[in-house]
Length: 307
Image: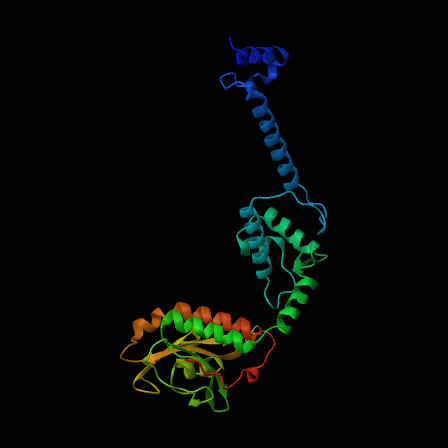
C-alpha cells in the first residue's frame, strides 16, 4: 500500500464519519484540499439561505453577500416592474393585486416592496396597501427638470419612421383644423411634403379622423374609430396618399394629438398599413408618456422638420 493509501486508512480510523471526503482513489495530497473545498461550499450555501430568509432593515452601507450577476439583474427587473404597476390615479394597491398584475408570488412581491419601501420608493399604508413613496416623486421631479419634450418626440418619430420605412408625424388640433407639430420623413428619396406648422382639415385623413373621434365627436363612424383605436385613410385628403393614425393621450386620459404613418398610395395598401400598426401603437404609448411630463403642446417647437 502506498503512502496515499496509508494516509486514507489512517483518516478513516480517526474519523469514520468523514470517510467519504477522503476519496481514497484520488492522487496523494488531494484529499485534504477537497475536504476544505466542500466545507467552504457548504458554508456558502448556508449563508445564502440565511440571507434569503432575512427581512431586517438593510442600510446602504451594509455589506451584502455577493450574488450571481443574473440574480442581480432579475432583482432590478422585478423592482422596476413593481414600480411600473402603479397607475397615475391609484391611491393604493393591495399585495394580492400587485402579485396578480405582475404574475409573481406574494412572498416575492412583498420582499421587493419592502426593499423599495426602505429606500422610500414605496410606502405601506395603514390598511396594508402600498403606494408610491417620496423617492419616486423626487425622481420624477429630477426627470422633468432634465426633460426636453422636443427631443423625446423626435426620437420616437425617428424610430417609427425607421421601423415602417414611411413618414412619421405628430398632429394636434388647432382651432377648426389640425397642425403638424413634428415630423420625420421616410428614409428614401420618394416622399410627400407636409411642412411642420402646416394646417390641414380635420374631416379628412387618418390623423384628422382620429383627432375628431377621440375629441368626442358623436356619431357611428366616430364610435367605430374609438372602438378600433386607429384609423386608416386611403386617398381621402389626397388621392395619391395613404395613412394610418392612432391617438396620443396624456396621463389624465385627455387627448393630446395623433401620431401618423403615411406614404404614397401606390406603395401603401390597407394590408401594409395594418402591418405598421404594432409599431404605431407602441409609438403612441411612448409619446403619451413623453407629453405627460407636464409640458403643454405649445412648448413643442413648430419649426422641427427632419428628413
